[in-house]
Image (cartoon, rainbow, N blue to C red):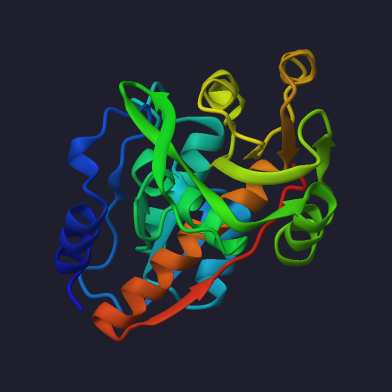
Length: 250
């Protein structure tokens, strides 16, 4: 497939132009004009780049790209990363907020569906647009039952703040560094808020407001959307697609 056709599909499917984002969403580094294999990963880093070359990939699609607002200098690690991609003619496509918030394959929708919850609404306003989703269990569940599902399917190392209702019905998710949405989670009456990074300031807020919080890891919570996007692209273009797992433990 032609690179420009794949990029156009991704731009349209993810509606990247609709988002104000610190990330420069879209094609960040241009490689070969013809693409036979695409790999998907969470982070644009040398471990991913080296593995992409090993797997003979022509293109990498990531959640966290290389360019956040602009390139200040092409030296040091920026030079090494760009040099590697350009010398090996590997394209790099990044999609940040549009992937978090996508209503079909986004990180936050996928987090709810991991728990067999269908999204009912959105919250977590960031730069004027909601990126999180919430919904309800058909039958309330205990916090430990939910934690077991997340441990088995996402991340063994959860940080749990057990400050809310024992029986959990209404659940919301904002992946990655999503603790900014905790106030909104409280305001809309969530029994459980799921996010990625464990932030110190969330502890007392959750305790004093009586809400359960699960921090399931920044990396782990943002593997779901990129894997779902990989499946969409593989079906759309009948290309060879693979996921490169480079967990950070954070």
